[in-house]
Amino acid sequence: MEENPRPLKRFGQNYLKDKNIIEKIIDEFDVREGEKILEIGPGRGALTEILYKKTDDLTIVEIDKRVIEALKERFPKARIINRDFLKLTLNELSEPNNKLRIIGNIPYNITSPILFKLIEERESVSDALLMVQYEVAKRIVSSPGTKDYGILSVIMNFFSDVKLCFKISPNVFYPKPKVHSAIIKIKFNKEIAEDFDDRLFIDIVKAAFGKRRKTLKNSLAGSAFNVESGTPGDLLSKRAEELSVEDFLRLYNFFQNAKPASTR
Image: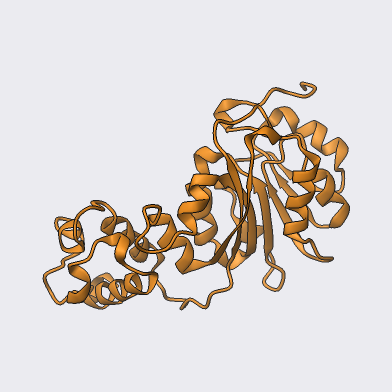
């Protein structure tokens, strides 16, 4: 067991060291009694130290085995899981009437996979407060017609309510990253039909943005989506970044209804 192990690049580790920022993050998260809290990637436990005092139901997921023993010693009442968060099944940690609240300074190199996992398992998650790269946060909260608007903007805003809480300087980390960071708050409080085909919707969005400078008709041409058989015509002449989340839902409804009965 290393004492104060060095952050590892392969895990995308940048440890928080500024107490004011740590307190600000915890205040934004606003832990209440009885909530099930899951922290992703605690590292040396900067956020964990305060979370541990605020809840009796804390689960810590940490991939770096070098820090596990130290975390167990410091936080004996917490449930500590030495695994890759992406390989967990969240419904095993949640309860129907007490969903997980997730917090974490997540590795920036796997931000998208983590966000997509939360969407996929949103029935087990109430909300999440995550630190991400500032440029990614801007993309997530951007509006149609802006240069930042893209796949993450549409998908995250369809499945959740997302807010960019505040920007964070590289100076509060060790080692200091080359980019600014931001805290985003994600709430899974939207009513989405139980039979909604997440994969179909996501595939449509990805295909539409596959050739972002082209109109939807051209960007979807050659994809799995046939644009010649009654696709909403007012959308085909637009580029993907001009379409609202509601427009993408219209596309989804069209392609969902156009699927042969045998594939539904």
